[in-house]
Length: 90
Image (cartoon, rainbow, N blue to C red; front, side, top):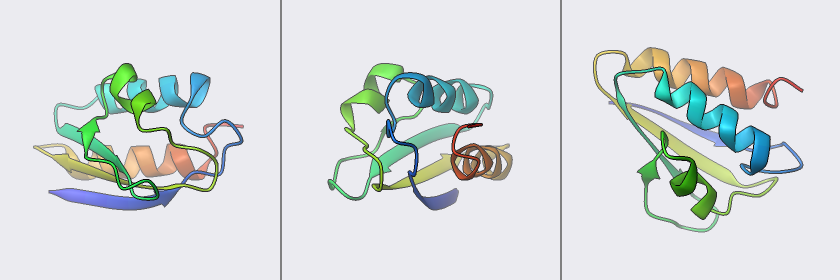
């Protein structure tokens, strides 16, 4: 299993376009990818589900933990980390 703890800097948090990009990126991998809002203390949810990601209520400045389990887990975590650190391409 691979994991990363990331801080969301995007003004919209994980809502609207950033959430869609996050889910699309996670869905590219065979690994099971889950995300937790550490700031709010939520339970892990499926990072490939837009509704699940939106229910986390991730706002700007929140910390999330992303975990991946499967053959391409390391690549999934690396790619999602790059997406978040690039501020979702903005």
